[in-house]
Length: 213
Image (tube, rainbow, N blue to C red; front, side, top):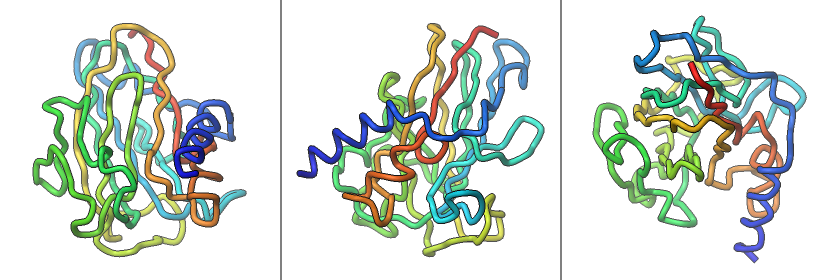
């Protein structure tokens, strides 16, 4: 039954358009050929909007504004330096494979300054989410915040407990839309945790819109 639930969840994530607000454009935020900075955060509850209790990702625009948007336009064949403010709590993974860091530069991430290649999700606060791009082989476990934490209204601010996570990856030379999603079932109140925000674009999944610069 769990396998069936996961298959349904993945299909829903690919087919359900949801209600994202638009596209955050990072093309031109750096000179051609130079790394692009992508800053995002995960929150346990939006606190606002039509679905205030839903867990979600947010992104910071190149102008410094936090937006509820999970489609990000990035230049092709470019190094992307990602910063994640991870405010949500975590739990042990159902599939320990997602404790592995893959597809990033060095197959690693740094969590609060410590380099990690793999994480035992039964340690500490577990894993809150993953940032996973199946078509690019990228998967990064986002370790749970040390304190169960709903900051009230997103975006959360640095004063709230969180993990600060960094990793880098290179966008492909081939342009196109690359679906990304979280692979930690974290939709409280839904079957196997896979409904609601897990299967709606703009919350726990979105697209990397890779274009020529």
